[in-house]
Length: 173
Image (cartoon, rainbow, N blue to C red):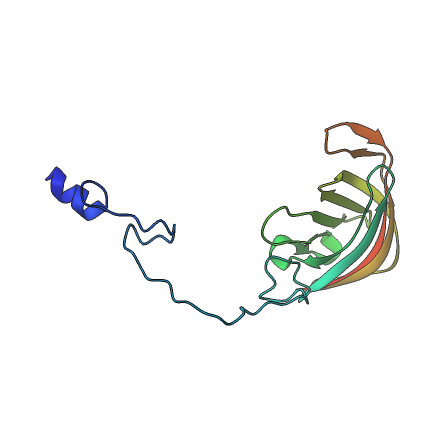
């Protein structure tokens, strides 16, 4: 019985592994050669090799102070919430695959707006914002922000005083 289980599981004597890591359980599947370039895109849309997707909106921002960063990140509808008068939490990223930086805009029920930035250069949590041209509804939002943080967290883990985030966004479900 143990021999039958080993033979069926792809392990044991006589089993081979094709080394592709392709989930074929040791079954070798020939790779087809191609001399044509694979399609890519630099516009943030599908086929963009992990870059931000601007299909549903974007945030453009500048971070100053101990942490320096500028960017244009794509809106992530599946990780966001448009609550209209109940508040909102909108998330944006520069990369959908690895080494992701995250930009979050949170509006509370009382209208207070906080922005969080996390990237390789550090984190600015809960920066309090002044807004202009602000409009967040049940399925979309847009506006400009100028935010000041009490502190920033450096990649080393050190906490330093201050931080500034300015920019604008447009997002829709």
